[in-house]
Image 1 (cartoon, rainbow, N blue to C red):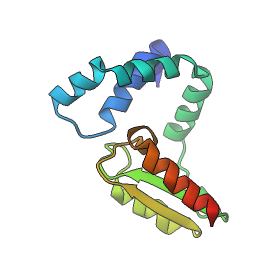
Image 2: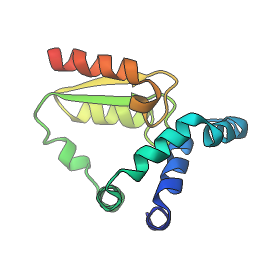
Image 3: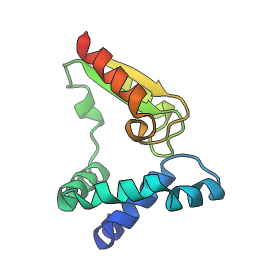
Image 4: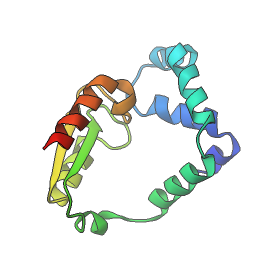
Length: 130
């Protein structure tokens, strides 16, 4: 978190790149690509303090007991190739939230909404329509 406070856009960009299992060549390509420039622009528009406060809360607290108290329909979207929260975590969260629907995005990392936006949007629309 401290490093992100010092250079938010670059550090979060690196988190995005490292959120999926990639070869060093693939990582370099992501750093140089147009998509990273778009992500950097979007990151520059965020309320950095709010994001860092949120992440700090996740890192410094254990929310497992809170999951049990969620009693509304909940859509869980996880990437099968996430380096942060993979299928084991997805299954745990799904089993713990009683009214959850789990969608696993094949070949997606930590950000399926960014890697597969059309499929992600379709899953959200399907969930909302229920």
